[in-house]
Image (cartoon, rainbow, N blue to C red; front, side, top):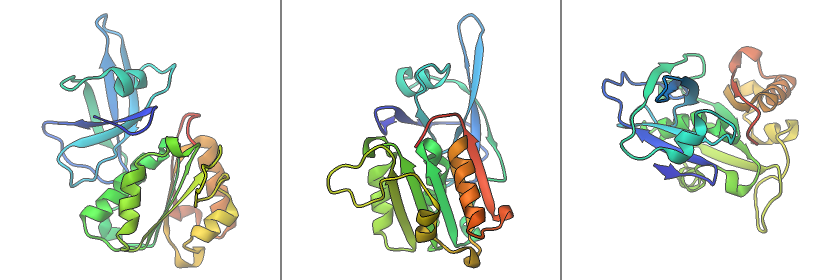
Length: 231
């Protein structure tokens, strides 16, 4: 287990018989109480397909039924049911090549991180651009790993924007994702990038609308959305 932020934890799961997954897929986690009550939620897979364990990064929702346990109470050795991998639309393989534009809001970064980890494990040098939005720098997932990936100088660029204040010396953006930011990060629509956008529903809808306005084809924009949390 790794505490990513004050509100998010990564769990590395040993899954006997795991069939393998593609970067961007998700799985369902089911918890069963002693009285038989069950609760089930879907979580994006954070690990690369090449990793031995299946990693989930869980953001704690204080009034949630599943995330407070997974992000706060679970201990090493606990067991629970999973079902997956699930999903085939929101996936990227290194063999797909680039250019690729990844846009994540809050914990919407998780499946995009699986793509970046897969890209690194596979030795891909595909043109990849990540634009990630978080509330504050303390809410940014995988910060150190993102810095390491960006320093490889292998065709990956990472741009970060904070929506609720920036610390002294911050070199990224300090506003919500908008058309100007998307145009700056690129690639341009004329390069026909594959685009993956994940985050809270309002974030995804706003980014997708801006991308279409910038000339990106709707069929090239793959989206995943979840509840009201995130950047």
